[in-house]
Image 1 (cartoon, rainbow, N blue to C red):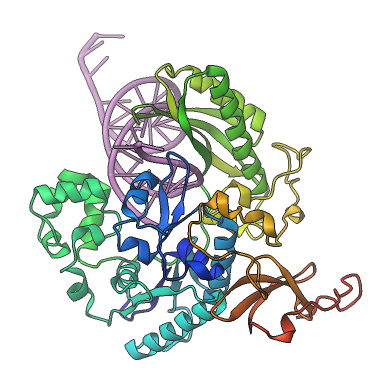
Image 2: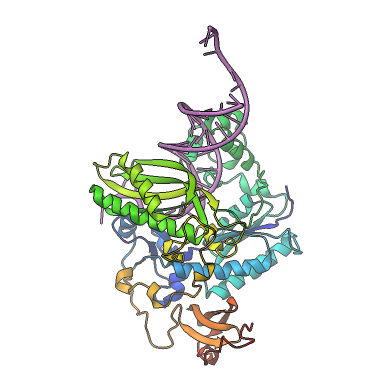
Length: 487
DNA sequence: TCTGGGGTCCTAGGACCC
DNA sequence: TCTGGGGTCCTAGGACCC
């Protein structure tokens, strides 16, 4: 167990909504709800203005609409934009320490113990302040909350304590003082079911939990969870910060606007889902032996079925064939609201780490299917590592990724294309020694530009004031010439 | 118009092998 | 012929996280 507050937890505040507010001036200060707008959609992120009305993540969109005031903007997610903002932040954190664990698109742990940083409370506080300022500058105003502590548990609790734009450093020795007054739900791994069981026994705070005998916890929750709670309640958490993790499964699922009964239609959906999964397997250089389906009935009861083969595959037609066979075992006559296909028991079909470096986003589990390069139709399936990493297009999508305002359901005033200068995400603005520059984000009088060149890969991120002449395009450099790599 | 989509980890029971 | 125990693999379901 370490003593110093050497683990940071960085959590971007209401990230999806913050990116939307950054990219569209008229949304600032207004309630913004990002999520599925169709009938059965749920809220992915609500801006703090919307949270004031009781709107929160995972809430059905229909309910969010009832709670939100007139003038609220309802937007479908633009994952590509969020991912680019995420990459800016993760790269920045990578400069703080080589040991960064990205846990989701908007969250990461940073281990400071492997660096030469001053780990005193004052030193870590100063460093965290600097990181927060850099995040805001590099993202065009998206803020992050940071917690620093001697464990992941406390660091994460710290980042949550003073959200948004918060900073909490838990000094060495103060862990229990911070932890014990909190409600048990704040512990990672305590969800609705665990919370309810604890409440039944009168356990409401982490301090209460720390007084429950281990035997009782094992009784209530089983060996693993019981031991886990026992330790967390005492701030005993030595989970290391781990930078790379291997994917264990790949899946795709879809909830239909109306329940489906037609077997032909269900099979067709299975084919589409299978093709998506297989495409992502190939993109990640993976194959799997187990094919799973997930079926959610009209009444929300959910069943899964699985088969495991001797040989791994990444072939969409084979996955679909197995999935169809599994679905035939399930009674679908009452109507199906969700269908899912997954592949697990994964094995790299490329030897060693050929793909791990080329597809870091794969392990990060952030991206929807659209984020992944689509394998070429003729890609070898199940053979030696034939999928070309070079097929990845790292450039940001240009306007295509931004749905029309009507489609996104924006209800507030102000057009996307207002009077110049309008800086559109993905807009090609500059060519210089760093490569080709693309608008990454804009707002607060600043334009953030990411540079990329065919020879340099993703380049540095730089911020310019609006009106800066350096934002205007120059002639594209000749990439074929020597020394074109630049930067 | 109640309840998305991508994951991880754990448990329990049965099959199977030695 | 009266009844083992351990280990591993597989399936199904559930809790949880962002």
